[in-house]
Image (cartoon, rainbow, N blue to C red):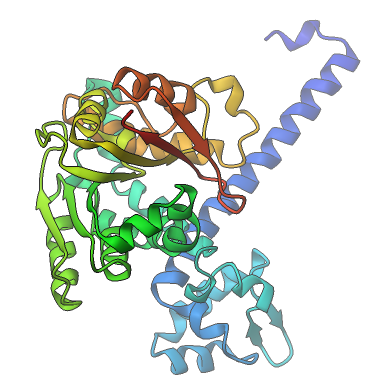
Length: 364
Protein backbone atom coordinates (compact mmCIF):
# COMPACT_ATOMS: atom_id res chain seq x y z
CA UNK A 1 0.00 0.00 0.00
CA UNK A 2 1.28 3.46 -0.95
CA UNK A 3 0.68 5.45 2.23
CA UNK A 4 1.84 8.69 0.58
CA UNK A 5 -1.44 8.91 -1.35
CA UNK A 6 -3.77 8.40 1.58
CA UNK A 7 -5.73 11.21 3.20
CA UNK A 8 -5.19 12.18 6.80
CA UNK A 9 -8.50 10.52 7.79
CA UNK A 10 -7.55 7.33 5.95
CA UNK A 11 -4.10 7.37 7.50
CA UNK A 12 -5.63 7.69 10.97
CA UNK A 13 -7.88 4.70 10.31
CA UNK A 14 -4.96 2.65 9.02
CA UNK A 15 -2.75 3.49 11.98
CA UNK A 16 -5.62 2.85 14.40
CA UNK A 17 -6.25 -0.56 12.87
CA UNK A 18 -2.54 -1.32 13.00
CA UNK A 19 -2.36 -0.32 16.67
CA UNK A 20 -5.36 -2.49 17.55
CA UNK A 21 -3.80 -5.44 15.76
CA UNK A 22 -0.50 -4.87 17.57
CA UNK A 23 -2.38 -4.95 20.87
CA UNK A 24 -4.02 -8.19 19.80
CA UNK A 25 -0.62 -9.69 19.00
CA UNK A 26 0.71 -8.73 22.44
CA UNK A 27 -2.36 -10.26 24.07
CA UNK A 28 -1.76 -13.39 22.02
CA UNK A 29 1.83 -13.66 23.26
CA UNK A 30 0.67 -13.30 26.84
CA UNK A 31 -2.13 -15.83 26.33
CA UNK A 32 0.22 -18.34 24.72
CA UNK A 33 2.62 -18.04 27.64
CA UNK A 34 -0.23 -18.33 30.11
CA UNK A 35 -1.50 -21.50 28.43
CA UNK A 36 1.89 -23.17 28.90
CA UNK A 37 2.12 -22.04 32.52
CA UNK A 38 -1.42 -23.30 33.25
CA UNK A 39 -0.45 -26.65 31.77
CA UNK A 40 2.54 -26.77 34.13
CA UNK A 41 0.32 -25.77 37.03
CA UNK A 42 -1.91 -28.72 36.24
CA UNK A 43 0.89 -31.25 35.79
CA UNK A 44 2.70 -30.21 38.98
CA UNK A 45 -0.63 -30.09 40.87
CA UNK A 46 0.10 -26.56 41.98
CA UNK A 47 -3.48 -25.51 41.31
CA UNK A 48 -4.90 -28.46 43.25
CA UNK A 49 -2.68 -27.71 46.23
CA UNK A 50 -3.12 -23.93 46.24
CA UNK A 51 -6.88 -24.27 46.10
CA UNK A 52 -6.69 -25.71 49.62
CA UNK A 53 -4.10 -23.28 50.99
CA UNK A 54 -4.37 -19.92 52.76
CA UNK A 55 -2.20 -17.09 51.38
CA UNK A 56 1.42 -18.28 51.53
CA UNK A 57 4.87 -17.26 50.31
CA UNK A 58 6.49 -18.98 47.34
CA UNK A 59 8.80 -20.81 49.75
CA UNK A 60 5.90 -22.09 51.83
CA UNK A 61 3.99 -23.20 48.75
CA UNK A 62 7.01 -24.99 47.29
CA UNK A 63 7.83 -26.72 50.58
CA UNK A 64 4.27 -27.93 51.10
CA UNK A 65 4.10 -29.48 47.63
CA UNK A 66 7.71 -30.68 47.45
CA UNK A 67 8.80 -28.54 44.48
CA UNK A 68 11.82 -26.29 43.89
CA UNK A 69 11.05 -22.78 45.13
CA UNK A 70 12.85 -20.91 42.35
CA UNK A 71 10.64 -22.52 39.71
CA UNK A 72 7.50 -22.04 41.79
CA UNK A 73 8.36 -18.36 42.27
CA UNK A 74 8.79 -17.74 38.55
CA UNK A 75 5.58 -19.66 37.75
CA UNK A 76 3.75 -17.54 40.32
CA UNK A 77 5.05 -14.44 38.52
CA UNK A 78 3.22 -15.55 35.38
CA UNK A 79 0.13 -16.38 37.40
CA UNK A 80 0.04 -13.01 39.14
CA UNK A 81 0.70 -10.87 36.05
CA UNK A 82 -2.03 -12.76 34.19
CA UNK A 83 -4.57 -12.28 36.96
CA UNK A 84 -4.90 -15.97 37.84
CA UNK A 85 -3.30 -15.73 41.30
CA UNK A 86 -3.61 -12.82 43.76
CA UNK A 87 -0.47 -11.32 45.34
CA UNK A 88 -0.02 -9.29 48.53
CA UNK A 89 3.33 -7.48 48.21
CA UNK A 90 3.90 -6.73 51.91
CA UNK A 91 3.93 -10.29 53.25
CA UNK A 92 4.77 -11.55 49.72
CA UNK A 93 1.97 -14.09 49.81
CA UNK A 94 0.06 -15.72 46.98
CA UNK A 95 -3.56 -16.88 46.87
CA UNK A 96 -5.58 -18.79 44.28
CA UNK A 97 -9.14 -17.39 44.42
CA UNK A 98 -11.88 -19.99 44.78
CA UNK A 99 -13.63 -18.79 41.62
CA UNK A 100 -10.43 -19.41 39.64
CA UNK A 101 -9.80 -22.76 41.30
CA UNK A 102 -13.29 -23.80 40.21
CA UNK A 103 -12.04 -23.79 36.61
CA UNK A 104 -8.42 -24.96 37.05
CA UNK A 105 -8.32 -27.93 39.42
CA UNK A 106 -9.01 -31.63 39.12
CA UNK A 107 -11.94 -31.13 41.46
CA UNK A 108 -13.42 -28.83 38.78
CA UNK A 109 -13.92 -31.67 36.28
CA UNK A 110 -15.64 -31.46 33.80
CA UNK A 111 -14.82 -27.74 33.74
CA UNK A 112 -11.07 -27.91 34.33
CA UNK A 113 -9.58 -25.69 31.62
CA UNK A 114 -6.06 -26.60 32.75
CA UNK A 115 -6.48 -30.03 31.17
CA UNK A 116 -7.09 -28.54 27.73
CA UNK A 117 -4.17 -26.11 28.05
CA UNK A 118 -1.82 -29.11 27.87
CA UNK A 119 -2.50 -29.38 24.14
CA UNK A 120 -0.46 -26.25 23.43
CA UNK A 121 2.75 -27.89 24.64
CA UNK A 122 1.90 -31.28 23.13
CA UNK A 123 1.32 -29.76 19.69
CA UNK A 124 4.38 -27.55 19.96
CA UNK A 125 6.57 -30.66 20.07
CA UNK A 126 5.64 -31.53 16.45
CA UNK A 127 5.95 -28.06 14.92
CA UNK A 128 9.07 -29.00 12.95
CA UNK A 129 7.33 -32.02 11.43
CA UNK A 130 4.24 -29.96 10.61
CA UNK A 131 6.36 -27.33 8.86
CA UNK A 132 7.99 -30.10 6.83
CA UNK A 133 4.54 -31.41 5.91
CA UNK A 134 3.60 -27.92 4.68
CA UNK A 135 6.60 -28.07 2.37
CA UNK A 136 6.54 -31.72 1.28
CA UNK A 137 2.99 -32.87 1.91
CA UNK A 138 1.97 -35.97 3.82
CA UNK A 139 1.33 -35.94 7.53
CA UNK A 140 2.66 -36.56 11.03
CA UNK A 141 1.91 -39.96 12.54
CA UNK A 142 0.37 -40.63 15.94
CA UNK A 143 3.62 -41.91 17.43
CA UNK A 144 5.28 -38.50 16.95
CA UNK A 145 2.98 -36.90 19.54
CA UNK A 146 4.63 -36.99 22.95
CA UNK A 147 2.15 -37.53 25.82
CA UNK A 148 -0.78 -37.61 23.38
CA UNK A 149 -2.63 -40.52 24.98
CA UNK A 150 -1.94 -39.22 28.47
CA UNK A 151 -3.45 -35.82 27.67
CA UNK A 152 -6.27 -37.35 25.62
CA UNK A 153 -7.11 -39.48 28.62
CA UNK A 154 -7.37 -36.33 30.76
CA UNK A 155 -9.46 -34.61 28.08
CA UNK A 156 -11.85 -37.50 27.56
CA UNK A 157 -12.27 -37.81 31.31
CA UNK A 158 -13.90 -34.38 31.09
CA UNK A 159 -15.68 -34.38 27.75
CA UNK A 160 -16.85 -38.01 27.80
CA UNK A 161 -16.35 -40.03 30.96
CA UNK A 162 -17.53 -37.43 33.50
CA UNK A 163 -20.75 -36.88 31.54
CA UNK A 164 -21.26 -40.37 30.14
CA UNK A 165 -23.74 -41.95 32.54
CA UNK A 166 -25.75 -38.91 33.57
CA UNK A 167 -25.80 -36.87 30.36
CA UNK A 168 -24.58 -38.64 27.20
CA UNK A 169 -26.16 -42.11 27.37
CA UNK A 170 -29.55 -40.66 28.41
CA UNK A 171 -29.63 -38.83 25.05
CA UNK A 172 -30.65 -42.22 23.58
CA UNK A 173 -34.10 -43.28 24.83
CA UNK A 174 -34.16 -46.56 26.79
CA UNK A 175 -30.44 -47.15 26.22
CA UNK A 176 -29.58 -47.36 29.92
CA UNK A 177 -32.27 -49.99 30.44
CA UNK A 178 -30.86 -52.03 27.56
CA UNK A 179 -27.35 -51.78 28.99
CA UNK A 180 -28.58 -52.92 32.40
CA UNK A 181 -30.30 -55.89 30.82
CA UNK A 182 -27.18 -56.84 28.84
CA UNK A 183 -26.17 -56.00 25.26
CA UNK A 184 -23.09 -56.13 23.02
CA UNK A 185 -21.21 -52.84 22.67
CA UNK A 186 -18.28 -51.73 20.51
CA UNK A 187 -16.35 -48.45 20.98
CA UNK A 188 -14.47 -47.14 17.93
CA UNK A 189 -11.15 -45.36 18.56
CA UNK A 190 -11.31 -46.21 22.26
CA UNK A 191 -7.90 -44.72 23.13
CA UNK A 192 -6.95 -45.64 26.69
CA UNK A 193 -10.38 -47.16 27.19
CA UNK A 194 -11.86 -44.93 29.88
CA UNK A 195 -15.33 -44.70 28.33
CA UNK A 196 -15.50 -48.47 27.88
CA UNK A 197 -14.30 -49.07 31.41
CA UNK A 198 -16.82 -46.64 32.88
CA UNK A 199 -19.67 -48.37 31.01
CA UNK A 200 -18.39 -51.85 31.82
CA UNK A 201 -18.35 -51.03 35.52
CA UNK A 202 -21.79 -49.44 35.44
CA UNK A 203 -23.42 -52.19 33.36
CA UNK A 204 -21.87 -55.55 34.35
CA UNK A 205 -24.39 -57.59 32.31
CA UNK A 206 -23.34 -55.96 29.04
CA UNK A 207 -20.29 -56.97 27.01
CA UNK A 208 -17.87 -54.32 25.73
CA UNK A 209 -15.00 -54.23 23.27
CA UNK A 210 -12.81 -51.26 22.39
CA UNK A 211 -10.80 -50.93 19.19
CA UNK A 212 -7.92 -48.54 18.56
CA UNK A 213 -5.05 -48.40 16.09
CA UNK A 214 -2.41 -47.50 18.69
CA UNK A 215 -0.63 -50.27 20.59
CA UNK A 216 0.28 -48.02 23.52
CA UNK A 217 -3.32 -46.88 24.02
CA UNK A 218 -4.63 -50.45 24.00
CA UNK A 219 -1.91 -51.49 26.46
CA UNK A 220 -3.06 -48.74 28.84
CA UNK A 221 -6.69 -49.81 28.46
CA UNK A 222 -5.93 -53.48 29.10
CA UNK A 223 -3.85 -52.61 32.15
CA UNK A 224 -6.63 -50.56 33.73
CA UNK A 225 -9.24 -53.21 32.96
CA UNK A 226 -7.06 -55.80 34.73
CA UNK A 227 -6.57 -53.51 37.73
CA UNK A 228 -10.33 -53.08 38.00
CA UNK A 229 -10.86 -56.83 37.48
CA UNK A 230 -13.33 -56.30 34.67
CA UNK A 231 -14.38 -59.47 32.88
CA UNK A 232 -16.88 -57.82 30.51
CA UNK A 233 -14.46 -55.45 28.73
CA UNK A 234 -11.89 -56.33 26.06
CA UNK A 235 -9.52 -54.19 24.01
CA UNK A 236 -7.87 -54.93 20.68
CA UNK A 237 -5.51 -53.17 18.29
CA UNK A 238 -7.61 -52.87 15.17
CA UNK A 239 -7.87 -50.87 11.95
CA UNK A 240 -11.54 -49.96 12.20
CA UNK A 241 -11.75 -49.35 8.45
CA UNK A 242 -11.90 -53.16 8.18
CA UNK A 243 -14.39 -54.28 10.82
CA UNK A 244 -16.07 -57.20 9.03
CA UNK A 245 -18.35 -58.07 11.95
CA UNK A 246 -21.83 -58.08 10.38
CA UNK A 247 -24.77 -57.58 12.73
CA UNK A 248 -22.69 -58.27 15.85
CA UNK A 249 -23.47 -55.28 18.08
CA UNK A 250 -26.49 -53.67 19.70
CA UNK A 251 -24.64 -50.40 20.35
CA UNK A 252 -21.60 -48.82 18.71
CA UNK A 253 -20.05 -45.65 20.09
CA UNK A 254 -17.44 -43.29 18.65
CA UNK A 255 -16.30 -40.48 20.91
CA UNK A 256 -14.41 -37.76 19.04
CA UNK A 257 -12.87 -40.37 16.76
CA UNK A 258 -14.39 -40.47 13.27
CA UNK A 259 -12.80 -37.29 11.86
CA UNK A 260 -9.31 -38.63 12.66
CA UNK A 261 -9.77 -41.75 10.55
CA UNK A 262 -7.82 -42.30 7.33
CA UNK A 263 -10.96 -43.62 5.60
CA UNK A 264 -13.93 -42.33 7.59
CA UNK A 265 -16.43 -43.40 4.91
CA UNK A 266 -15.25 -47.03 5.19
CA UNK A 267 -15.40 -46.83 9.00
CA UNK A 268 -18.98 -45.56 8.91
CA UNK A 269 -20.02 -48.26 6.43
CA UNK A 270 -18.43 -50.86 8.68
CA UNK A 271 -20.27 -49.49 11.69
CA UNK A 272 -23.59 -49.68 9.84
CA UNK A 273 -22.87 -53.27 8.80
CA UNK A 274 -21.77 -54.26 12.32
CA UNK A 275 -25.01 -53.14 13.96
CA UNK A 276 -27.82 -55.55 14.58
CA UNK A 277 -31.07 -54.75 12.78
CA UNK A 278 -32.36 -52.68 15.71
CA UNK A 279 -28.91 -51.43 16.79
CA UNK A 280 -27.87 -47.87 17.67
CA UNK A 281 -24.85 -45.79 16.69
CA UNK A 282 -23.94 -42.97 19.09
CA UNK A 283 -21.29 -40.62 17.68
CA UNK A 284 -19.80 -37.68 19.54
CA UNK A 285 -17.89 -35.21 17.39
CA UNK A 286 -16.88 -31.56 17.23
CA UNK A 287 -19.78 -29.12 16.99
CA UNK A 288 -18.72 -26.97 14.06
CA UNK A 289 -19.89 -26.16 10.56
CA UNK A 290 -18.39 -27.57 7.37
CA UNK A 291 -18.34 -23.97 6.09
CA UNK A 292 -15.63 -21.63 7.37
CA UNK A 293 -17.80 -18.50 7.31
CA UNK A 294 -20.25 -20.19 9.68
CA UNK A 295 -17.50 -20.79 12.24
CA UNK A 296 -16.51 -17.13 12.55
CA UNK A 297 -18.43 -16.74 15.81
CA UNK A 298 -17.46 -20.12 17.26
CA UNK A 299 -16.05 -19.43 20.76
CA UNK A 300 -13.19 -21.88 20.13
CA UNK A 301 -12.86 -21.58 16.36
CA UNK A 302 -9.15 -20.69 16.24
CA UNK A 303 -8.28 -23.43 18.71
CA UNK A 304 -10.25 -26.04 16.74
CA UNK A 305 -8.55 -25.21 13.43
CA UNK A 306 -5.18 -25.25 15.22
CA UNK A 307 -5.87 -28.68 16.72
CA UNK A 308 -6.91 -29.81 13.26
CA UNK A 309 -3.80 -28.57 11.47
CA UNK A 310 -1.45 -29.80 14.18
CA UNK A 311 -3.10 -33.16 14.89
CA UNK A 312 -6.45 -34.39 13.57
CA UNK A 313 -5.90 -33.59 9.89
CA UNK A 314 -2.23 -34.52 9.81
CA UNK A 315 -2.54 -37.94 11.49
CA UNK A 316 -5.13 -38.90 8.89
CA UNK A 317 -2.91 -37.67 6.05
CA UNK A 318 0.02 -39.59 7.54
CA UNK A 319 -1.96 -42.77 6.89
CA UNK A 320 -2.67 -41.73 3.31
CA UNK A 321 -6.13 -40.73 4.47
CA UNK A 322 -8.73 -38.13 3.66
CA UNK A 323 -7.59 -35.59 6.25
CA UNK A 324 -11.07 -34.42 7.20
CA UNK A 325 -9.81 -32.38 10.12
CA UNK A 326 -11.46 -31.32 13.34
CA UNK A 327 -13.90 -28.94 11.65
CA UNK A 328 -15.26 -31.38 9.07
CA UNK A 329 -18.58 -30.08 10.35
CA UNK A 330 -22.11 -31.19 11.04
CA UNK A 331 -23.18 -30.83 7.40
CA UNK A 332 -20.53 -33.15 6.00
CA UNK A 333 -21.00 -35.57 8.90
CA UNK A 334 -24.70 -35.88 8.10
CA UNK A 335 -23.92 -36.45 4.42
CA UNK A 336 -21.37 -39.16 5.16
CA UNK A 337 -23.65 -40.87 7.67
CA UNK A 338 -26.43 -40.93 5.09
CA UNK A 339 -24.07 -42.39 2.47
CA UNK A 340 -23.11 -45.10 4.98
CA UNK A 341 -26.75 -46.16 5.29
CA UNK A 342 -28.02 -44.14 8.25
CA UNK A 343 -31.15 -42.57 6.83
CA UNK A 344 -32.37 -40.96 10.06
CA UNK A 345 -29.87 -38.87 12.00
CA UNK A 346 -30.78 -37.04 15.20
CA UNK A 347 -28.37 -34.38 16.49
CA UNK A 348 -28.40 -33.40 20.15
CA UNK A 349 -26.33 -31.02 22.25
CA UNK A 350 -25.62 -30.61 25.94
CA UNK A 351 -25.98 -27.08 27.33
CA UNK A 352 -22.64 -27.09 29.16
CA UNK A 353 -20.58 -28.54 26.26
CA UNK A 354 -19.40 -25.98 23.67
CA UNK A 355 -17.07 -28.49 22.01
CA UNK A 356 -19.30 -31.34 20.93
CA UNK A 357 -22.56 -32.49 19.47
CA UNK A 358 -24.04 -35.99 19.50
CA UNK A 359 -25.32 -37.90 16.48
CA UNK A 360 -27.82 -40.64 17.27
CA UNK A 361 -28.78 -43.19 14.62
CA UNK A 362 -30.69 -46.43 14.34
CA UNK A 363 -29.60 -48.91 11.69
CA UNK A 364 -33.06 -48.75 10.13
